[in-house]
Length: 72
Image 1 (spheres, rainbow, N blue to C red):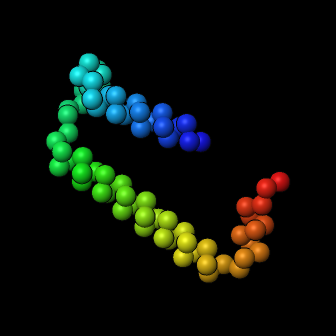
Image 2 (cartoon, rainbow, N blue to C red):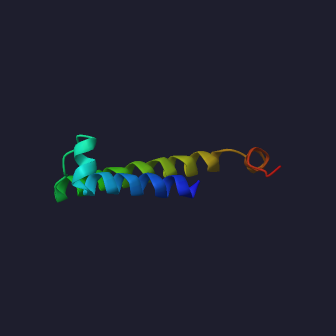
Image 3 (cartoon, helix red, strand yellow):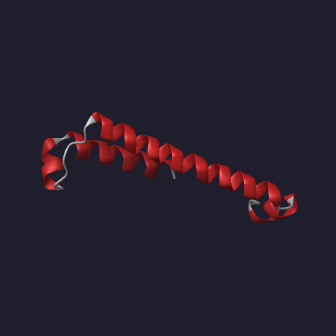
């Protein structure tokens, strides 16, 4: 699963950094402020979802978690 993440991020970085690929996909270069805003939005969205999962996991009995995620 990790290779999908690495491949996706690598492809996106190549497309955004190489002018030929940027022109092929009709992308425009992002200013530094735009990259910072997008990165912060991504971090915030992942963190709130992880907090939500942690909160909901604590409300459920432990045996339900073990039963659902047990390796078979």
